[in-house]
Amino acid sequence: MKKFKNLLKQYKLDGYIIPKNDEYFNEYVSSAKDRLKFISNFSGSAGFAVILKNKNYLFVDGRYTIQARIQSGKSFKVITIPKKFPKDVLKFNKKLTIGFDPRLHTESKLNFLFNIKNISLKSVNKNLVDIVWSKRPKELIKPFYSLSKKNTGISSEEKILEVKKFFNKNKVDYLLVTAPENIAWILNIRGHDLTFSPIPNARLLMNKNGDIHCFANPKKITMIKKNLAKKIIFHEENKIEKILTNLYKNKIFLDSLSCSIYYKNLLKKKNIIVEKIDPIHFFKSIKNITEIKNMKKSHLSDGAALTKFLFWIKKNFRKRKITELFAQKKLENFRKMNKSYKFPSFNTISGSGPNTAIIHYRASPKTNRSLRKGDLYLVDSGGQYSFGTTDVTRTISLDNKSNYIKEIYTRVLKGHIAVSNFPLKKNSTGSKVDQSARKFLKKIKLDYPHGTGHGVGYFLNVHEGPQSFSKNNKVNLRDGMIISNEPGYYKEGSFGIRIENLIYINQNKFEELTMVPIEKDLINKKMLNKNEINWINKYHSRVRKNLLKFMSFQEKVDLTKACSPI
Image (tube, rainbow, N blue to C red; front, side, top):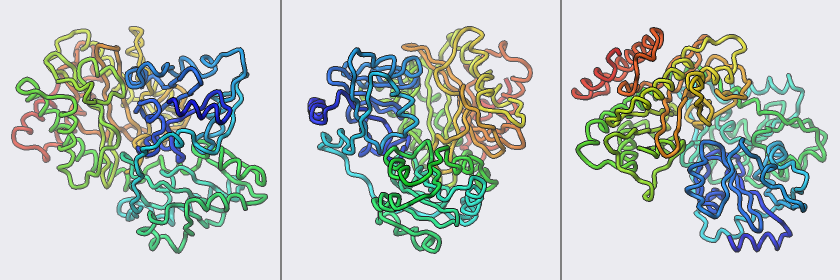
């Protein structure tokens, strides 16, 4: 930090902004690109730091407030967005010059956060964190690979034709694709660049004729080049600057979510810029018949693994010492028993007791608790399978007898059921669904500081847009969209509850993908109406029917009990 603050003087800056994302705007970043963790020790998936000469601020959303305070220690003042924004904190009588790396920020987000009277933003082409990061991890370089039509349902050629229609409707000459997950979708390729997602770090430029230029590390395209060489021209990653600079008097569409200020500046001097959400985000969000079929298959494999694990926890927590980290490893071993399992889709949240209240808790040797009688145990986890992506949360009782916790759990469950039963109409949006999930907690003046659900990719990012169940999401919900349903409640220092299934839209109705029993020991049946009881019993009947074939004799007995009517 001392070396970093010396750089502020050298570059004549009063401060510097360090975001979580890398230059591809990935949610999860490689250890070599995790600049925010290096500077602050904060490991969450979202946030940014503002380093001033005499003070350091770490801005996170409500999911990460507790975690950020613990991990960053006394070196940073943690600010929770949206309770406060930089404009509320960076109030000084004098003018400040704040530096930023133009490759790591979009213009819209930077202006939204830092359009402050006393602050002048200065673009700095050298990343200051990189200058002081001496023992930086090496980046893994492994080749991208292609998926067959059996896996994707639609060929790359068909997808390119679909995107070409967008050019005609919007009268643009070029589409610059800067989100790696969108490149994965249109080319039917995957990669090894991140720990939790098989996205290929690359960039793509497509013109109205369907001609495509792809920019990536030459060592990464060796396996896909043969399949795609006829329709795609490949370039080294750094050649993109030259090609973009040479574009002249064209109408170019940029993704407002992932196109950096750096690329926008290269283009806007000589071209007309249209900056909106990349249309591929919308195409990708609507899963085809093959993708839905394969996602169902992956959720059966995943549901069997998690159910076996939860039975194991229930049987063993009284007999032996089980820590959060050991439980996490045990769950991973259950998943690995399936040959199609690749790796986790995000950092597993394995929390017990008061740690369940940390929304995105990550067990470490310092925080690693043993599971104890009377605790709640919350496990939020997911897997990347060769035919899908999963994300599921269950909160279970370890002989917890609290009537208050049962009441809160049941209110969360009622919200979960309300989402599943939400009557979708032609113009239904995620914001309306979000409201229905919260109403049972709000009746007793409680709430949770995160959205109710996020879109999920197909063997891609576990968090995917543009759809979500959140207060401000106005995207129309369409058949084929996959979304998580995860209301919760968190009492700091005491307990946390979350129940999460993945659901998809089929003929204007939500259908469950996740097949894992819901914890009955925490339900107060008196709080449920007939429709809610019927939903639970029907869901458990489906879970039992689908998972029975994966279970041993004793596990079949346990499954039958876990799925018996309430």
